Length: 474
Image (cartoon, rainbow, N blue to C red; front, side, top):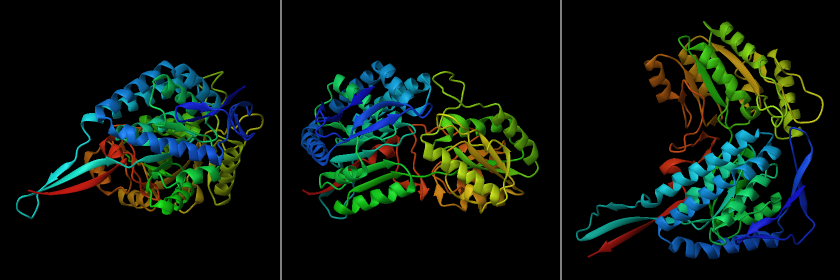
């Protein structure tokens, strides 16, 4: 069993205490690694190293920073088997999916490297004669990156790459459920000769993470996590008026119109709820089905869900994998039980499995109401509530009557319907006739309680900058 040490100022630091955290395999419940939990001194050293390095890093031309990122991406691809092996063990994903996540993370790193010649300011007309207004884009400084458990390799580079290309340095806190893959990425950074202090990775408890986030040198905190975690980060930001960038909860509605390709829509909905056991921020979490096709669509969902079996993907990659933890498994089952008590009917699934691993069967709930907890709160698992509607007005009203506004989905063959929903849906994304997938040249940003700021594309890259206006009289 491997023990991972924290990566600070370009090197792996031997532990200064006996504080460790076990990492288990959610498919078997077995401990597969352990990580050194950073001390407060470790955390301060990492922020100070990042702050020192940022002065030199920002002085490089953007194209030089881009070259560093390209070498980093090359090292990630070269080490994809090792990164993937660590990720598969700690997440319950298959080896193939884990290695592909590493390669996709390299892709987004290269994408942001390409912004090197495109970080542009503006020249703004002045009201005063013989005067120019020039708006510069500048780095913020040190960025604290808080990474979730569900796609920990991709999300890490999704945040780190734009931070680095714009001249910032980073201190990364991976999820304590999936930290091993982050330290494998740190080995790739070392292999790529990324300058010391530019990229730091530490496993931390909550108190130590708070010390990092409230350090005066930290100018921005970026998080992918729950709404409650977002509130904690906003409290951290108060200390030094740090900039927040938050991708929080999601409860993506899927509207199924009567003219939709029902077979394709059902396949997509089930894939969305069973990929990584439904642990995706953009997974379809509530489905509104037109009454005219409701029974047929429910039967398609039931048939396709029953065809999905769960198990250890290391043994059989065709299986649906586990949830992240025992508590997640128990919490989701409790939500299903409460839904039944409120009047929902289990069409398939809904049984808490016995034995090792944190599995839960694909579960379909019908006879749901819009006011039920199972419809109002994020599930983050393979459970799908279905609600019938009579008109598009009614479907839109229910889809928009919600605390979350991250992603949304529409299945229809009518372009007028598609345009109307595109103009009226209260969400940062609408996917028409396809499964949500976060194209990295787009902009992944939530409305309402789903977040502040966003990731990906030009706008995600600019999140990591601040402006300076130069008023030049001549």
